[in-house]
Amino acid sequence: MAAPLLDIRNLTFQVDRHAILDRLGLAIQPGEIHALLGANGSGKTTLAYVLMGCDGYAPSGGAILFAGVDLLPLKMHERAKLGLTLAWQEPARFEGVTVREYLTLGKPDGDSEPALRQVGLAPDRYLNRRVDKALSGGERHRIELASVLSMKPKLAILDEPAAGIDMLSINHIIDIIRALKAAGGSVLLITHQEEVALIADRASQLCAGRIIFSGGPREAVDHFRGRTCVRCDGEVCNYVRT
Amino acid sequence: MVGAEPSILDDTRIAHVVAHGHRILSHRTVPGLRVDMEETPDAIIGKLVVEAGAQIAQPIHMCFGLAHPTGVQQIKIDVQILEGAHARVLSHCLFPFAQAAEHRMQAVMEIGPGASLTYTEGHYHGPHGGMQVLPHATIKIGKGARYFSDFSLLSGSVGNLDIDYLVEVKEEGIAELSAKIFAHKTDHITLKEAVMLRGERSRGLIKTRVVLEGQAQAEITGITEAYAKGARGHVDCMEIVQGQAKASAIPIVRVFHPEAKVTHEAAIGSVDKKELETLMARGLTPEQAVEMIVSGILR
Image (cartoon, rainbow over all chains, first blue to last red; front, side, top):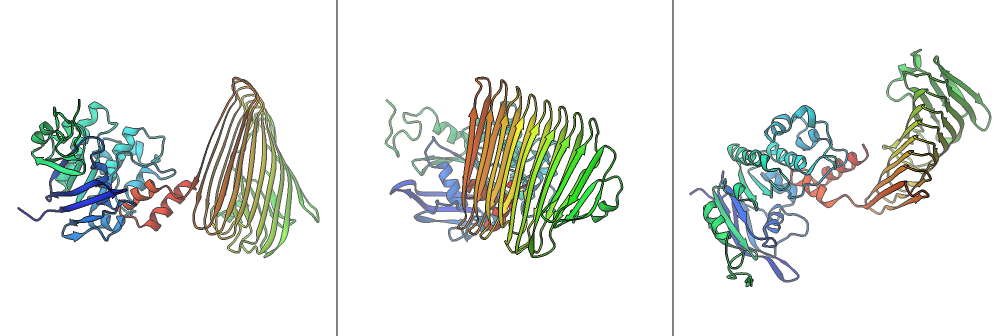
């Protein structure tokens, strides 16, 4: 097997001495779609923020190697320059910034139209619109994914990419995730939606800041379902439903 | 002085007034527009009337300024847009070398029934911060009339800016006031805009975007009062504060009729962290990200 693109070792992140990520280990191969499942509060979004280097999310222990490079000393934009990016669950809105500008960040000569078409939005209707609150939640999500597509990242962390997307459009989101892989990228796919998780090559379940299961996506989804504790059967988090 | 296109002064289809200090350098009128300008030692006194029903196709350019580091310019102007008339004014206020200069504007505007005026005002005060600018205006908007203003001061220093506008809106009239200002160093802004929605179904919007850096200070007051059935108003103020700058926003909304409604939103703070991090996650440096967010807000 090739060296992992992303290699997370014993990653710990604490808030007030409480471990949100607890000696977490995870590896993602080049070209892999890896789904991350877990109950609310299990640490999925925190892991995304720590990987991206968001302000206030410096880990207290462990290591993150990305294409063999130690990420921890790097700032967010330096990580992005290496080919890592994050699509937020609730994307930010920008007053005055057009969709065209947003899709060509840092590369003014970039062509924003193909990415917009890939997410199912007509360029002539959207390129001159602003990435502001006039867009619906679903439109904003699609533009966020178009922005990731146009960046051509080595690894895209997608935090609930199908949140707020209507049922008929879920397949479109799935196509976009596959397009990222087809372009040679990897995807860390945080999702609660089974049909989205099942497109992954592999999947892991997170509970109380630890990976408690890794395997095929169907196995991971089944592992997550119908347990005494919806998270881990009480093995890790000590929570047992009564 | 005419924006980026001086040839506008030679175009006979375009009305203009150009004044340096208290001297009128040039003016031209077009059919449907009367312009009377008078030089006095203390002020330029002018009257601009758009005749009833006239549609002034090209914007009327008003260019005021001083080409010296010091001096005073005072403009007293009466603008009347008579019933059913439509006009656009592009006002350029240029003080590129100001070190201790002053520009005062006292305007009275009256927009007649069914008429409209779009007033776009761009300022440049040079790099020194020695400019004092005091535009004060009273604007009366008639039944079914519309008034749109857009004030911008986005490059160079501001100096000391003190804007005071009072707008009265009659039945089914519309007033929209927009201001965008980027202040630096020791610039000081006092901006007070008041919209009185006197008539039924009248509407008002005050939208202010101010970015402050260095030790700049701003006090923004947006007042909307609604007195009649169906009147609708909104005050929207956003101030981005960087460095040692200080800002305050005071939205004042008052409603005097049970079927009127006025809303407001005000936000003051540093650049939004999530917006910043989103752009950095696409590879922009923190400086590039701040520049993009700020330029978007001031657009």
